[in-house]
Amino acid sequence: MTTSSGEPGGVTDAEWSAAVEAVRGLTPGPEGDEVQLICHVNPDGDALGSMLGFALGLRRLGFTRLRATFPGRFELPLPYQDLPGLDLLVPQDEAFTEPALVLTFDVAGESRLGDLQSLLAAPCVIVLDHHGSNTRFGRLNLVDPAAAATSVVVDGLLGRLGVPLDQEIAECLYVALATDTGSFKFDLTTPAVHELAARLIATGIRPGDISRRIFDTRPFGAVKLAGEVLGRASLDPTAAGGLGMVWTYATLADLARFEQRPYVLDTLIDPVRSVAEADVAVLVKQAAENEWGVSLRSKGAVDVSKVAVALGGGGHRLAAGFTGHGTPGEVVAQVRALLEQHLI
Ligand code: 5GP
Ligand code: MN
Image (tube, rainbow, N blue to C red; front, side, top):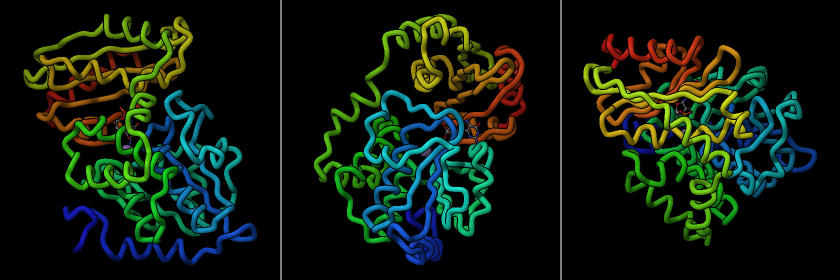
């Protein structure tokens, strides 16, 4: 079996060919087929960048009946408000109702599609993703767990469709790649990742400007809020069989006090997981009265995706998440118990 990454479990030649045929079999143009692109709820840089980069690629192929969307509240984090291709983005209730093709980006399972799951009834659904926990809910599934970002899979499909990288597509894919590799810091930052980054930068995009925008720009209130949330972190050195766990939480009241939107919490797990005394880091973010979005991170000794999957979520070995219920302490106690049960 030949795979995109050379690793077992990647995308086969037959899967690539089937996806290329599915796209090539459609009619582009103003009277042509409708194509709906979807990324996951609370979209991050990889979800948005991969989706918009591919949408722009389809536009280069002559498709005009294109819409991109994501489930839930129609609100973009500040860092992504300048992405190319945003003119294709619509709120979920303006998605096509009967598209000929649906493509999903960075969506590990149906539940991450929220109200848009009904679109999975489309004649053809292509899933582009890199989560090991992907449930392969498409008719065609381009899922490569060895890929550092979904944008690596997008680049693979664009290349096979004969779409050259231009600056707009490159900026989208660079944002996606830089986001999911943590600025090229994580383990999956392979030679192939840097080769892709080189091809993207060669189009003339400015990595310094992009990085400043996506990593180093936040409202003043978000910095103050971070101070409070980090100030209440707890270190539990005996958790995870003595490997240690550090955790903290943020409530809707915290967000309201600093007049911030929930997305500002998405990167707060990074300073939490920098704690040397803990292999596992947990950030519990209130989403509703009794509902919490939980981010899990590991430095390497623990597979946190197993904990997340056991609690109804998913993700990767070193970065995963799930939706929890109860108080933050109760949610963390569930995580702690699963870590002790050697689900690691
Ligand atoms: P984050 O903590 O940055 O939100 O997410 C880390 C990783 O876990 C991402 O790869 C994300 O896709 C995955 N993840 C986070 N929350 C959930 C969830 O509720 N369900 C699933 N299936 N995956 C999640
Ligand atoms: Mn991703």
